[in-house]
Length: 219
Image 1: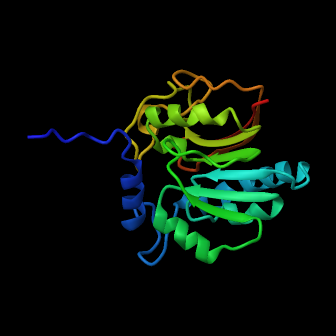
Image 2 (image 1 turned 120 degrees about the vertical axis):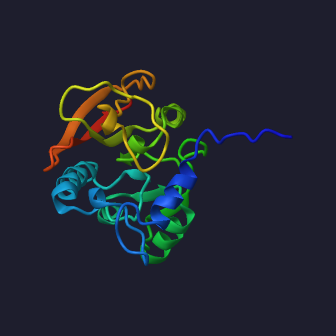
């Protein structure tokens, strides 16, 4: 009898289930990426700093949004870019986004961030994506990030000092329950950057952590 090999990266199945069962909220009739992508108190400060950054570069940047979700964030940023490439692992979600959101400078791709080759761009946006991925997946992705000039990373991390990068199984949950969060500059990821700039920090009303957005200049 052949032994069944367990998938090391079950992310695609997990994310498909999240949207199919509306585990992040919303209705059965549409996709919904959770309050973190819709709550004005959370997203408006993020949109303000991202818009300012993109306008500083005179809308000359090609931006790749890795983990674009229901595109409630991306649809408000694409106009400030030369090209906006939105990526997600859920194929039905990408097909939905293609139908609803159309512009000359906008593309959608269904890709697995850990496994697949990523599009060429000047800037990567990773907004509350890595917190759902295993360390193995993040390590695979980090190897690809050195080719991009800017990385804008948003992560949900604890309020108090914490132990970074405890491993998890990919899915709905994040490292917060382990008093941990993603820090790409720490082991086992060890991302090397030229400059690190804090763009935004939002403390959640329930005191269950903070959402931090950081700009990394790679070269």
